[in-house]
Image 1 (tube, rainbow, N blue to C red):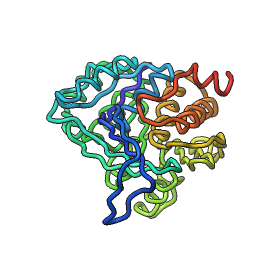
Image 2: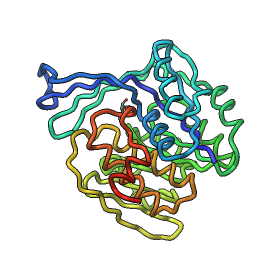
Image 3: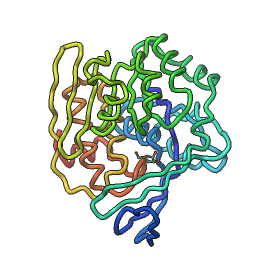
Image 4: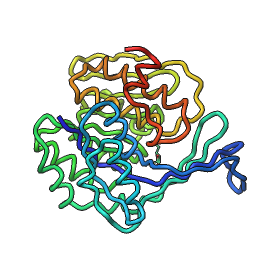
Length: 290
Ligand code: RIB
């Protein structure tokens, strides 16, 4: 099957700092580098590295042709990436403990057209997956169209915006959030996650693992994290979601897919960077065994 990922593609600028800046503070970076990122691109790369067939739906500017080519090199189908005004970018500040603060400028990520969505999804079949995050436009239209075509919809509610989640909630089959996003969603809806009507909800708790709420089985399962020394948590959540989608797309069970996604994310936090350093299946197996 195929994962259709409506997702952002950014140029990521990484600054390693002695601490995350306070209001009014000016800091000199100890290190700087640039790479490909965007929550969407990170998930496409992760799913592709997790051995899924991935079609990315998105947009860059002429200044982002390098990223479109790089996605292709990483095995992602890029035929439905349009060329818009300017490429989105992200300023990523990382402190010595590996925590980050991120500012994004969406650029072409918010210029995706309905025509583009229709043309990409005209290639989809029932049983394929639509994957999305909250860094592009056209999310509600895409989720509705995908659902009508019989696709399974996986949504990572990051960066969190109550209205974006509310607009697509009726179409979501699998919702992935971190614990802060989960709290924000519960307080914006005024109800607990389990009563939102979504079949599967995954809440990740960083180094404390996470929870899977399975509405169909009326069951909550805790999953463990893998203890590692994190140097940079940027993109770890995207890696988790991309690998989770890949596992499910390949017919693995939820338990197997969670284990694979957890291992991928554990390896990812030991690395500096985003799309360009997402581990592949062999690296995961070399580290953790089959
Ligand atoms: O989740 C990490 C990603 O968030 C970065 O790659 C950055 O581009 C922002 O989208």
